[in-house]
Image 1: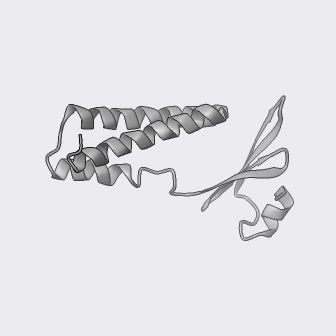
Image 2: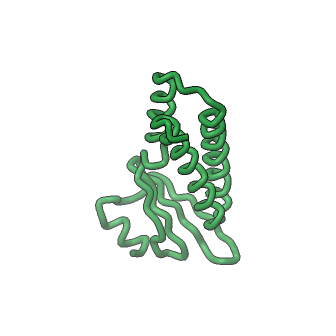
Length: 123
């Protein structure tokens, strides 16, 4: 899908366009209220709907461990791991390093899995 095709869909004209030019080409980020569309060299490479990157899973897990009185070294480690993984993800995403971005996201997922295991007393 091209930039022109994005604008003729339900996305419409973007509220803001961020452009980054590198030796590899041009990356445009179309910013909308409902999310953003990433185009590399004029072709859509990803779509992000708002809300999917927020701690929708993490917060309830932490609140559940708190309500159940589960406070162990593992849960503290999982919370710290999640924080640093998400922070790294933002920085790596901004720098545009795809493999490390995926790795940092996966580490955050592992941190959430540790909290689930702690809640079910499997660790």
